Length: 156
Image 1 (cartoon, rainbow, N blue to C red):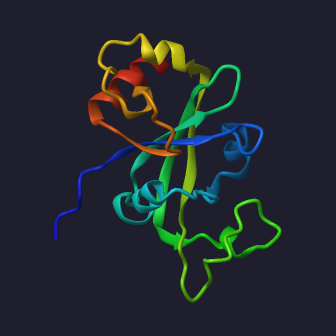
Image 2 (image 1 turned 180 degrees about the horizontal axis):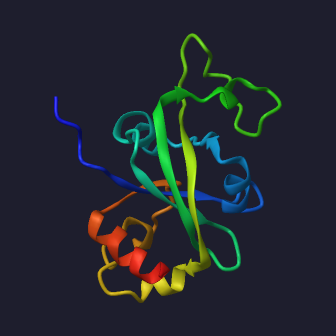
Image 3 (image 1 turned 135 degrees about the vertical axis):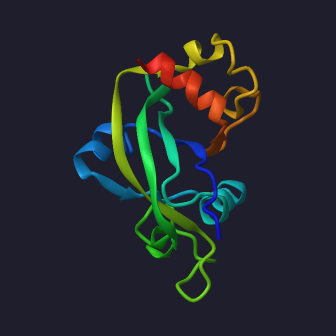
């Protein structure tokens, strides 16, 4: 069976909760706490080992793309849903019937500077990017290969 082509993603995190610097220090982490079914389905079903993702700082100054991480391994049940002390606890999820999934992400690179959302909005070739669509709030989003290439040029 032929390997699927590499896919690209954008993962949002508030830097006060977990930043690109935290990932650089930790080298890898489980991307837990996603509590939206569409984003969960992406994590569980669409992402694959080796895919690349932009690490996006939300609710920051500036908000924007801070670096790159890589999806590592298969989807796993998100154990934070079972921890009553965790902000993302969900009593409907259990080890026997997990509702939520996560992926391990590995640090790849921190950009010299965050690429601000305003710059992304004003960049030719990104007009249809999910992140830039009105009402787009998903914490896990697809990025096309062309969008990836445009943003990588901005990061240089």
